[in-house]
Image (cartoon, rainbow, N blue to C red; front, side, top):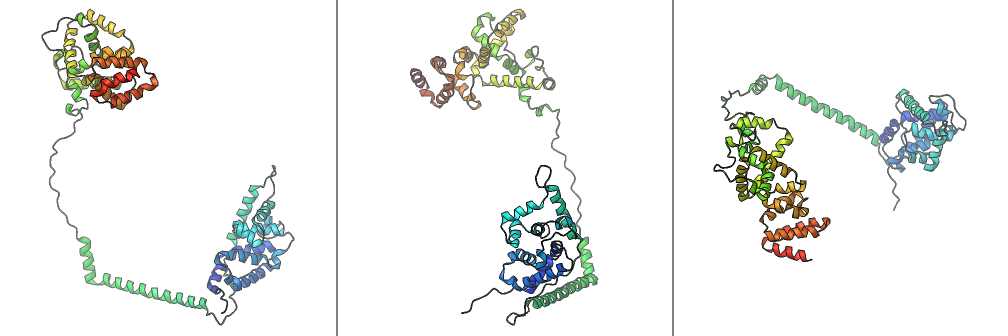
Length: 455
């Protein structure tokens, strides 16, 4: 059984490789040797050895092996400095430092391949690169010189003329056919084959365009466009009119000016119902603030014409409109019996002389802020709010509606228990108490409150 050896690469691959780095190799050999006659001889010798030994290396290692062979020739290892050539600044460096620098700037090798081509470690190669650079005033490598050398190397490469690199073929072998010649013949045959296919396609296309029938088919296809008139336009069912009162976002609010007026007086009326009802005259025969002209004398928005009220509403500032929307929401949240009670109370308050109305308004205005907030909830909760407000003054937005329903449905005994809990519950435990309170069923809420009070 004989030992198998890797087959040598085709000569075409070796020739393509050498042709790809021809200009870099010529520039490196010229600068490293400093001799225009010795450089071509070194290139020729390195190419012949590489062509005969390329089969023993993977293609990925070809660059480092080629540069190793080139730098091992005698003319590349001279120790004296060279002052002539296309890169005089690099040529004046010592031979070993010059070779390390050229492998990076001209051969474009990375540090690992360049160190392998020189037969040294990567750290030693990096040290040679640093030694090649002059120092600036701070003793650091001068990077401006490095950039100048890189630019000069690129200009020198661009200035070199293109030449056909002669890639020496390996020694003749009777066991292997001339694969490069076969590949060249195959490429020539394929070129002729594709040329024949293109000629046939062109002839077919030309016969189609030149024939009379072909031109007629093309003309009929190009001119076949169906044209039909559009149907008459249908009149729209409606058109947008920004001045249309029906489209106003606050139309429902403005359609009931009496209700809006009652909503704006809600905290005052709730206070009057609880604290000053005896100061009001008996109820009149007419209903309070009907949604007609009876409210117009109090509120400029309560005119008889909806369009006029909308125009007056739009003249208000955004904060004023938001305040009145909030007042209407508070009014609508009241139970129906409290709305009816406050409506009757508003008529009695409107029957008072102006001086007495002003006196009652001043008494209400002298109340504390917390008391004012409680009367926004109606007469019943407003009366108990000073006692229970500590528990419910600051709640999560998602709990507000549920807590209001719970408080309005609570009995007097349950409100008394909540008032006692408000006095003994620390601020940090109030949120947990509210969550547990909401979790109780209505039938069990009174017993739970008593049990919580006993803890």
